[in-house]
Image (cartoon, rainbow, N blue to C red; front, side):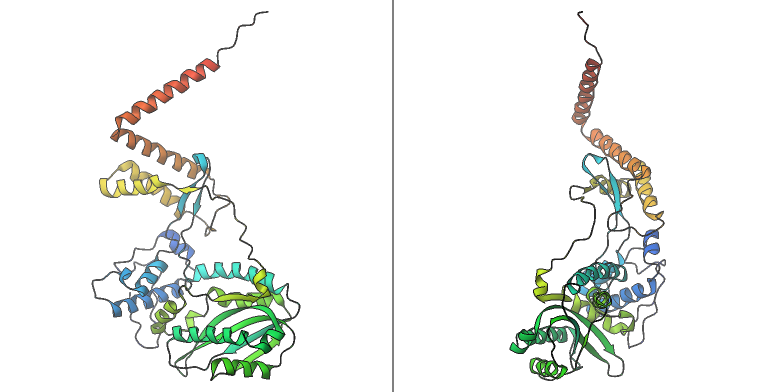
Amino acid sequence: MSTSVQGAAPAPARNICQTPPSYLQPPSPYQCQVHGTHAAERDRLIAALLSEHRSRSQPAEAPCTTRPGRLAERLDSCCRSPIAMVGPGNHECCLVERRCRSRICPLCSRQRAGEVGDHLLAIVSQMDSPRMLTLTLRSTDRPIGDELDRLVKAFRAMRQDPMWKRCVVGGVWAIEVTWSESRQQWHPHIHAVLDGSYMAQATLSSLWHKATGDSQICDIRLIHSRKSAARYIAKYCSKGADLRKFPADRIAEYAEAIASRRLYQTFGQAHKIRRTPPDRPDRTSWHQLPEWAHAHGAWRSEGDDVARSLCKQFAALADQQSRPLPEWRSDACSTHLVACVRALNVWWEARAEARDPARLRRRLAAEKKTAKAAAARRILPIPWD
C-alpha cells in the first residue's frame, strides 16, 4: 500500500480488506462489512495520518508516539470486533460495537449527525422567527487551528454587542471548514440559526467587521423549513467538513485542529432546551465478560485448545452479522450467544479450580448442600387426620 501524500494530489486508497502496514492490525471481516461503503474515504484518512506520523517520528517508532499516529490507530480499530456484554446473573447478553467516535471517522460522524440533528430540530422548532446566519473569515495562510480560535473568539465578541443583544434572544451555531483549491488556503466560517427580531445585513456586516477587524462578509435569510435547517447544521456539527475535498497533506492538520474542540454550541435562551438522550435500553448494570480476555490470553500464550475454540465461536458470531450493529443490539439475546457465554463461564470455573483445589472443594460442598436441601423439600408432611 502506498501512503505517500506529498503534494496536493490525493493518496491512492487501499482496499479495506487488504492487509494494512505491519504496525496496524489486519482488518476483521466485520470491519470490512461495516466500513465497506466508505472504505476509500476511510483508507485515505488513515494513509494521510500515517504519512504525517512518519514525518514527525523515527522510522522504527510506533504510531502511538505522535498525535496523528494515535488518530490513525483509533480509526483503524473502529468496529474491529463487537464485545460480549452480560446482564446481572448472566441471564441476558448482547454484542456491542467498539466505535472510535472520532470526529473524522465516516461511520461515527454519520451516527453523531443523526443525534445532533434531533437536538437541533428540537431547538429550532421552538423558535418564533428563526433565521440562518453565515459568517466568513478572510482566507489567510495561517494554520487552521489558529483560524478556528480566531473565528470563535470573534463570534463571541459579536454576541456581546448591545445591538446584537437587542435583536437576538438565542440560537445555535456550528463550524464549517472548506479548502480553497485556487488560493491553497483554509476557509472557515460559522453557520448559526438565530431567534429574534429583524436585523439588517448591513448592520450584521458592520458588527462582524468590528469583531474581526478584517472580515465583513455575512449572509442572513429567513428559514422556511426548520427540519432542513437543523439537518444542514447537524452535518457540520458531526464532521465539520467534507474531507474528500481536502488535499491529503492537509488532513492531519485539520484532524488535530478539531480534536477535542466544540463544533457546535447553543447560546441565549436556547441554553434552556435540554438535549434528549437517545432511546436506548438501560444497561448500566451490564458488564463486559472478563473471562473473554483471559480466554484470549490462554489461547495466545498457553495454546489452550478449549480457549481457542471459544474465541473462534465469539469471532464467528461477530463476523456472521448480516448488518452493522447499533450501539446496543435490541435483539441480541440469541441462543448461540447465550450458549457461548455459558461455555466460557464453565471453562473459566474449571481453569480456576485446577489452579486452586480449595475452590473445587468449596464448590462440591455447596453442590452437596444444595442437593440435600432440594431432597428435603421433596419430602411431603404426613397427614394426621
